[in-house]
Image 1 (cartoon, helix red, strand yellow):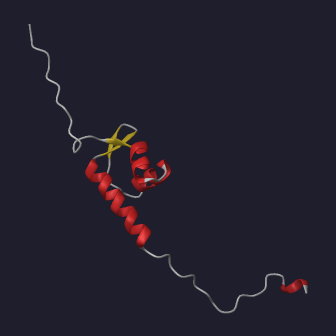
Image 2: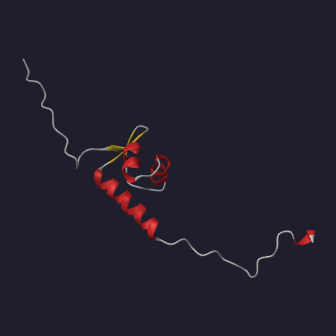
Image 3: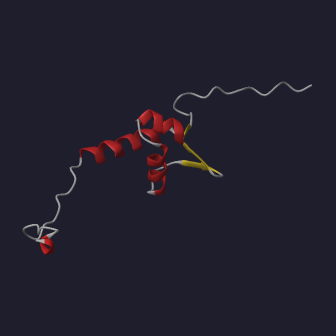
Length: 89
């Protein structure tokens, strides 16, 4: 008789998180997380399932904080804004 296989307990560092779990932890939408994956964020893929390690989640968090702290670019203007209804005067 063979002994039963030993179960290895996964530590928090080894655990993999789903898109929904990452989105909830970051306070963002699942769509944002998926967009980051499309944009090149590190992740694990098992078939069509996407998973993140704790290190990868930290990188996503840093990516989001960097995007938040960057001010939006100023609009380019070419002079005085014309009245849209100038022909109706």
